[in-house]
Length: 125
Image (cartoon, rainbow, N blue to C red):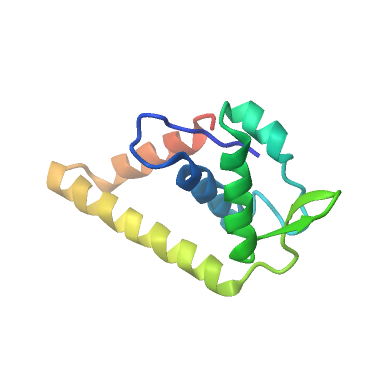
């Protein structure tokens, strides 16, 4: 699981982490039953407070995306709520529409937008 925290983004770190985990579940990078890093391990990896990770895991558990098994760890839920997946895809479509609108405003051709998107996918996360 790859997560990147941007301290200068203005978005709270908990929201950044939760959004990236949601996106990885929605895209299939994280599959049902996959085990997530422990709170301590992920906090250390991201250089954030353990309570930050704990809040993210609790929030995503409340949303039905994760399951916390006492003494065993945190896992992607076996049955991810369909509404969550639909909401994530709807959000992605909205973001893409905004990018397309900006590209048109700047006079960027669709082919160049496609190339930029491909490059973004190739960048390490």
